[in-house]
Amino acid sequence: MSDDAPWSAYEMDIPDRPGVRATTFSRCAALSKLINSTLVMFFAPVVPMSGALLLAEYEKYLDWYRNLPAKVANTRNAVPHVISLQ
Image (cartoon, rainbow, N blue to C red; front, side):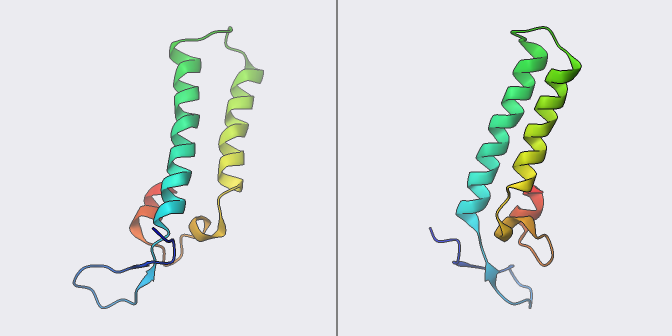
């Protein structure tokens, strides 16, 4: 499925927008991996918890957000699933 395939709201008079479905799914999957890593860190730790470990985990989330493609980074006039991703 192409990211350029149009998305339109049902029964609303707003112009169609690019759906960016594949990109949104890809970024959601990457975020799910990060969340899993965090959950394992808290609930099944392999190494003792430390401030450096928490900071490293936080940096992963910041990097994920910084590396969002422009198609899904902009929430202005975005489709609902992009806003949910944010």
